[in-house]
Image (tube, rainbow, N blue to C red; front, side, top):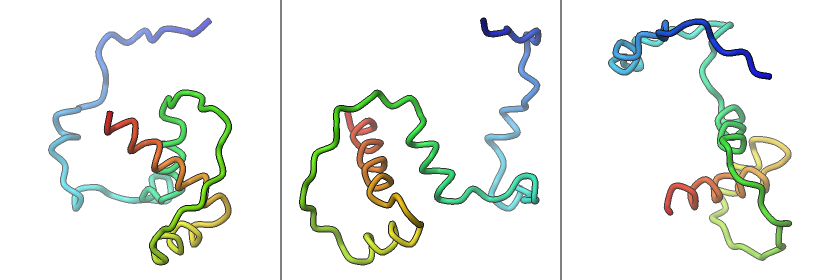
Length: 92
């Protein structure tokens, strides 16, 4: 059973947070700048529904786009699929 918070009011100052500019954000070892892997994991885990088994296709992609995905390491096809899935969810 999930424990409910005893706090009735959030402690985060959302108005201040929304008004912050990029220059106001202080990066540290504890709070580094988000990298692409972190963002893609967030897209993949953002409550997307289970999908049927994947289908093999032949797809022509600009060379520089493909190289960018490949440069991020193993799993580039999964990342491409995640980006396309996220786009279809937003475009509905």
